[in-house]
View 1 (cartoon, rainbow, N blue to C red):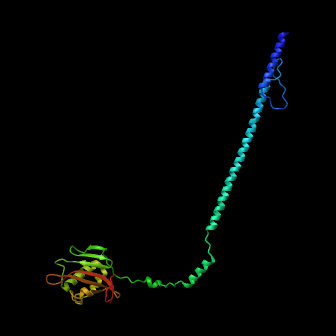
View 2: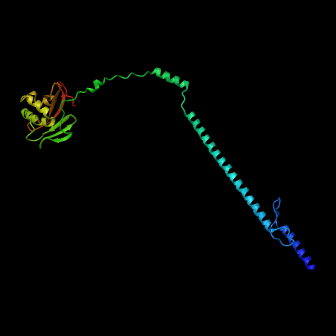
View 3: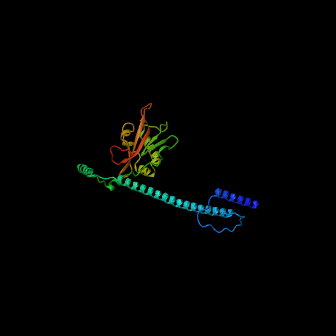
Length: 267
């Protein structure tokens, strides 16, 4: 009898300790317990554990739903902020374009009109394209290249543009005799100007060049004239240097000039 009363007292004390240490389950209808319990046990620990697990799962679902909602709200806020920033940038660009466009004030337009009236545009002279395009060109030009050229071992020719200078300061070539100088011209000029000058020299009778003037005093200034055609002639100017018995012709300068010109224009 005493032993049965002692066992009841121990079971009651254990039940009170469990009620103090184990938190209460959520409010609501408790499911029917199907677990085996000891005699005098009013609270099933298995049911308590299942209730805690169900509550934990419910809290986790609520947290997941709240996190998903927060993500949706944050995404919407971010997209709205980007859209607002883009609209502000577009509006700022439009304002900058509108403020940067030049505007002409009435006062400035009036000043420009007065200036144009005070200084009317000057009429440009009309140039006849036919007159400018028909530039007369010589019918004969040198056939040797520009610069120094050797016509023979003792004769050198130097071309600069349309002027050719021939040097022959050698004992057997330099001369003060008009007939010798004429023979030298008839030999060297075709090598400088080609077949057309050779034909012009052939038409001139022998001695026609020597009789045009004094080789030492007249021809260096006036030049020897060799007709090419009706519009052009070849002008040859002898050049001298002092010698033992008097001046000697050691060079000549040749150029094509207009026929009948008193002063030859170098072309």
